[in-house]
Length: 472
Image 1 (tube, rainbow, N blue to C red):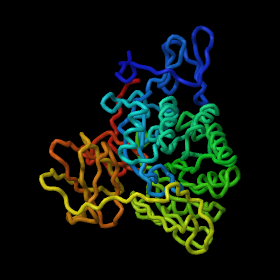
Image 2: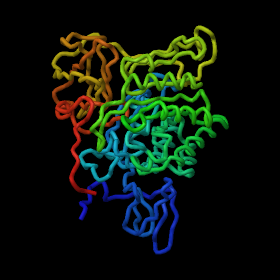
Image 3: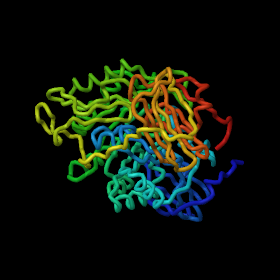
Image 4: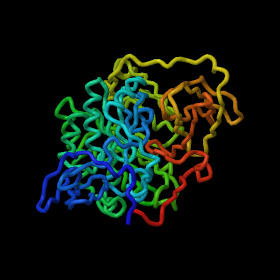
């Protein structure tokens, strides 16, 4: 018999369902439309029938909130370089065998130790305290977190915050109607243009996702609708060929328009698909150029460091509009226009007055020092603190020499990423009572739950994977 974990013991009234005979219910949140008898859960294992009513098992249950930047969510045309508060939950509507966040997306593997408990007020107050203006619903997938997302996003809007939805988008039309009331930005992952890919590797179907993207696009075109960007994860040996990537760009040209940003994203092996390599960068560059040649105006590469293909350029005169390196983005736009030829840019700048970070001239004495060195393709990490005291950090070279200025952060968990080719590691300075842990981030949407002291024994391409032989 399956062991009931602590996070599974309480439920919250769910939205989007209707009653069936014999106290059964039918869920209306995703295209599966699960029919659920009393005491059972749907396919996602996050929505349960309790005495004839549907409840959500993950309301307010989350991985630690993490400060990142908006580019980590494959959003390049909205507030470049903006700090975001990334929020991930537990569970997923899909079962991708290559999932990079399987430790939280697949309910059977979720450990109580990785689950935090937040209220909508907790999230909004935390963002306001740390001067973060965008909440990002991300990581495993926010669809299964629908009730908490809706409640928190509404509250966030009341306080002037923006909401970003990063999702594989296996969601119903009714669910999207809900989201369109509160979301400002959609970053949608279109994994393949082949229904057979979805059925074989994700347990989902393609058409509902295409319909969902078109629904968001229609709202955008109707005026005052959400910002939209689309990404395509190029999985080694499965869809990493120019025929497949062209299918994505062709569909966007025929069903959306050439102005919607497209991201071809590099894959790292994970979960049950680890006997391959990361996606070839030369292939990704070819796919990008092919899409541009076919008519797409803004095509980017994701999870690729040290590439010009992460920058934004004018499609008319090729002048650089935004330069991106690590978590740093610098805009050269002139009042929203190309500084060279003057055409208007589609890159949205909702906050014209940029925040400036204070430069720390000197690291206080008496702090504990610890060092983390990057490994190969892993050029980012999460830093987690045991309390909210001020932590100082500085990038260092391979020989330990300082690179750039000293930074500071008081968030419970935040991302640091290499942005200078000389930087090979990070040095942290913190009070002795502030226990810090570093988590290697294999790519921009990866939420690691295993500390670097363990993962540094693994390949720089494939995280350590501990799969129980059994378990539900």
